[in-house]
Image 1 (tube, rainbow, N blue to C red):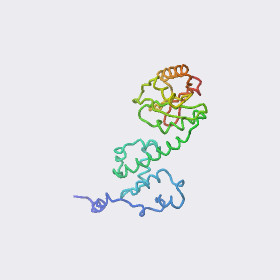
Image 2: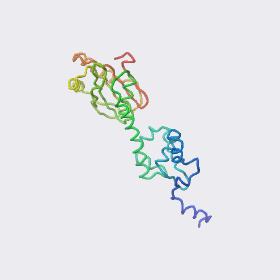
Image 3: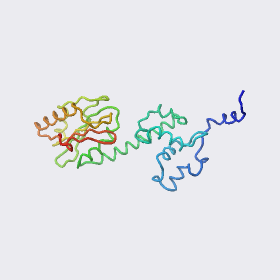
Image 4: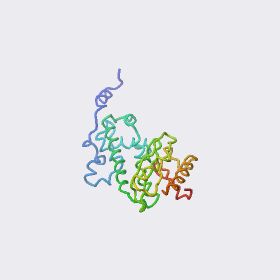
Length: 242
């Protein structure tokens, strides 16, 4: 026997959604965007627009805040969640999870497209800005080479190898083949550390020495080697160890 009839009533509406037009004025991000512009909205409010509706007991803004909190209030962390991980949040079904994943992937691709406009390398920071959207958030290691002409403009970029969580194999001979094909006079080496550490390993130092020596013999200069993580980078040239 149920102790209170009101529980039956609430149970009937437990799975009902809470449409935006029923929210309080402060919880209407769609109207806020139209009235004040996109910059006026918080991350949670923007995600709430994607979600569209919450549950009987929770608005989409509140649900979005809960998801962000579980992701350390970091959109990059949220973007790493799989569909199943997103659907583990009460109130997020498959359709909403797919919408969130698609939106965050579009954001990543936009950053990558903006970075691709960088054609002239002026510093290690410009290399990081170019390559972080490409390899900075990957769960595995990748080794890339940027090929530059005499004006330090990128004429080609190439994924030399792809590995696992802790390393990747680099073929020194293959690294320089595109340089001749594209008339490059210099190269910049880049690889990521999924662990987030910026300290170069002994293997990192060894492959850098091998590539630098090979480049000298081919009259193609190794200008730098960057280790890239999600938020920062290590430059061999900047540290004076190239």
